[in-house]
Image (cartoon, rainbow, N blue to C red; front, side, top):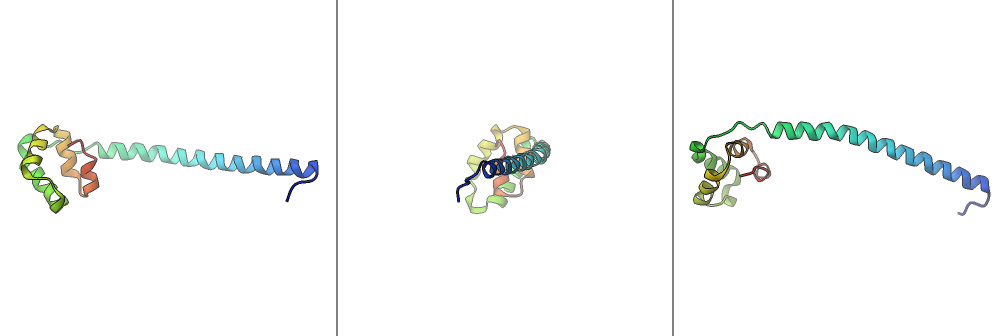
Length: 106
């Protein structure tokens, strides 16, 4: 259905501008809400209690309990654990799901 008069064309353009304004407002609201959520997530995930290198056996046992048969060998994990930072080991100890372990810098 094509608009035939100038008035119909103008009304259609006004309706499109109003729809665009609503979409822009909705996107602004979503962006406004998403930013604090991202900041809260980053802050809460970065606050893992540091774990010293001497606790590597506990870290490896924890990883084994979460990853089960998908976990790497103990020797490989011990090498990774000894090379990791205290914060990375703390991140692994705080993880309770496989995807959370993968997010750690271990």
